Image 1 (tube, rainbow, N blue to C red):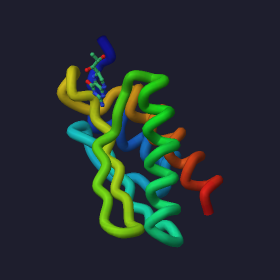
Image 2: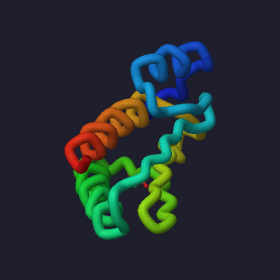
Image 3: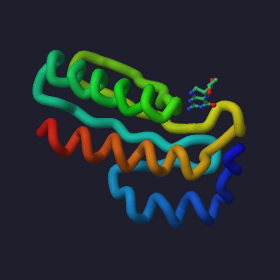
Image 4: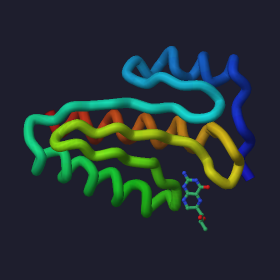
Amino acid sequence: MAEVLTAEAVRDRLAALADWTGDPAGISRTVQLGSFPEAIAVVGRVAEVAEERDHHPDIDIRWRTLTFRCTTHSAGGVTERDIDLARRIDEIVRSAR
Ligand SMILES: C[C@H](O)[C@H](O)[C@H]1CNC2=NC(N)=NC(=O)C2=N1
């Protein structure tokens, strides 16, 4: 099972993920899309990636604003799997804008 990163390791990884904040309990990013359908399309693409990886972010949907929170529930905190998922979410958001 993936190990929970230390606070220092999370800070280190977040230095390369400019839009994300967090700590060993979880990392999150809020993003506003152009419209509700665009936001839902992003959620759909993130859902595909999450299913492929069997690793799922918590997602809050408020009209066209999405908040993604990544933590590994089975490990009780942030692991490298969450860092990888955050990078993929960034790619999906980038290509949707
Ligand atoms: C059985 C299956 O592997 C688990 O339930 C997966 C599914 N997706 C998951 N996603 C996340 N973020 N954390 C988990 O611990 C997790 N567990």
